[in-house]
Amino acid sequence: MTTLFPNAMPLAGLAGGALIGLAAAIMLLGLGRIAGVSGLLARATGIADSGAPRGIAIAFILGLPLGAWLMTLAGHGSSVTFPAAAWPLLLGGVLVGYGTRLGSGCTSGHGVCGLARLSPRSAVATALFMLAGFATATMLHPVLP
Amino acid sequence: MANLIALAAGLLFGSGLALSGLNDPARVRGFLDIRGNWDPTLVFVMMGAVAVMMLAWAMQRRARAPLAASLFDLPSTTKIDAKLAVGALLFGTGWGIGGLCPGPAIADLAVRPANAILFVASMLAGMALHRLTTR
Image 1 (cartoon, rainbow over the protein chains, first blue to last red):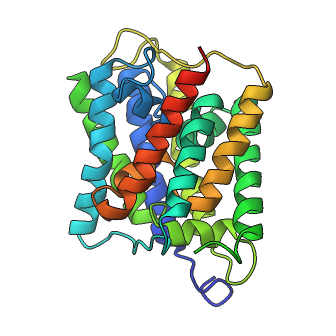
Image 2: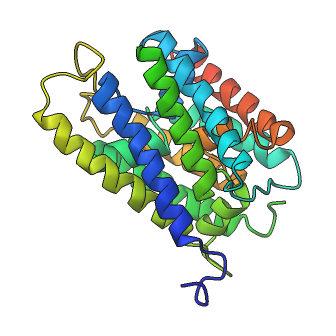
Image 3: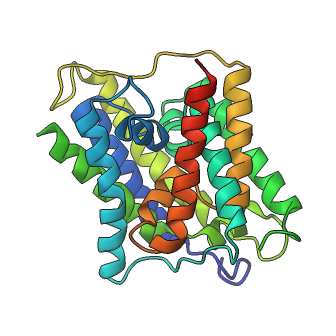
């Protein structure tokens, strides 16, 4: 694996993925809700008026940076390298924000929760955002900082 | 109690993002850019997350109610329409450009605040724009 794909980290990926799945399982079995980050963020910030109770949305969203901070503090955080210019973050952010609201979900809601539920709607959404992601990153590679 | 459970779930979710490298824009782009040294790590992240979540759905089907809420409040829409398709395509395009999706962007506020805030602020602007233009 590491000779064929020098950048791969399969074990950290599987373990981190399992933690993400466990978090989504707690939301489902504990609170009866989908751990969809875009929906919870819109709810927490008041951009959406319906959805999860406000307190739940705010608590979940606050947990995200807290968890990443603790994992980094524990010495197991991934290296993080941002694009060298601001425009990919600004443009990418607007597209992600608008697109996830229009399409009712992102990698967590459609990708993790919806795929595991075998939802055809989420499977279509996941296939399309993956396709657009592959096409964009591959074609724009020469111009992306 | 419900808020504490949600905080714990968010904390686990964020720790998983940082461990798996899904919060690293360079790694995400290394996965989405299929040329050069392609990085398959995200396939493992999705396998780990979906496997655990499939078990959770199997338990959910047998449960009458969640442990700490009165009922399951789950999406019932099955419609596959233009909104879903265009939304997913726009989201994927932004994911490929910035290398971040919503969860990792928020998690990175604690790891690379000066960079992550640019993405999070414009993501919120995009969400607000959707709200303003759809009613």
